[in-house]
Length: 267
Image 1 (cartoon, rainbow, N blue to C red):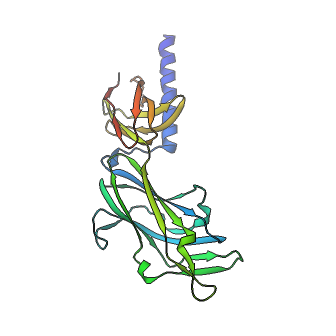
Image 2: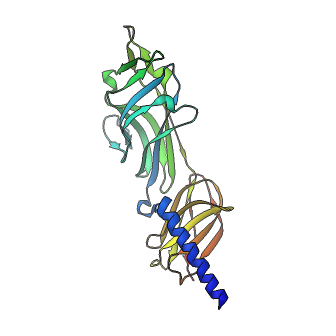
């Protein structure tokens, strides 16, 4: 009798830990299954200024071969002013984190506003003049394939030294952005099903003693994205304590791929 009570107490403790943990830091990606997760980050090669502020208004992608048509705004772009000189030495900031359709992303476009300026080493703030041809945005060729249920990160490397030129009149500067873009898959993903689907279950991907990522099932389905390549144990904690916890060991994640796990049936 004591063993049963102890087991139930342990299971309840695990469930409560899972509920608190997931409520604070986890989100189920099942509703976006079949789409790619696409992050756009901004970083910088340094220049000879105290600060360089650019006015980010939008980030667009294009699946077509047309430079004029087919542009789509990424949802949730973090518009505003960014000081490029705080983004050096491998630092970056995420401009967008969105779910997009699969396929070949042909181009990306960074759209800037008019409120761009530099702070010189003398402390003077000088507005950057922008050629009229840049009003439609800075376009970069990608031709990168994005697959379903994989997290990708595109880094826009803004070269300040090559992008800002002193104009004919002293004290005036021209902005002609020079940006290098490189994209890579961020780890792989794990997906699967827990039965019965009426029981909401916490799913933890564990490496050693560390919980690397986690989610809840949604109608029995779960999807965990952006995990480093490696081998993991999946721990399943049903919120209904009449079911036992379960573990699947040896789940292998491969860069840029989705690992599908056999259906787990709760006991």
